[in-house]
Length: 102
Image (cartoon, rainbow, N blue to C red; front, side, top):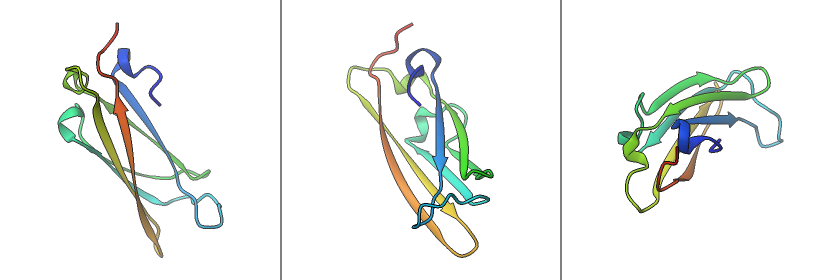
């Protein structure tokens, strides 16, 4: 969710886990890693479980250096979901805005 990223410097990540048939998976173990870690102020690794509707929400606070400079910066989120019988990974790339507006 990038709506208020420029002013609040907080990034909310919502992860939904589904199987091949499209059913939501509850109770899946999630590990989320943000790269580069130097842009994240409160730790790059998050872990948790999906709730009863197959979703999990994580929050990141970004440093000022993530927005500094004129070039756009890229953040990558690597998510790993695991159940007792299966596991999968997915990477998502996010372009950060170049300058903070207050």
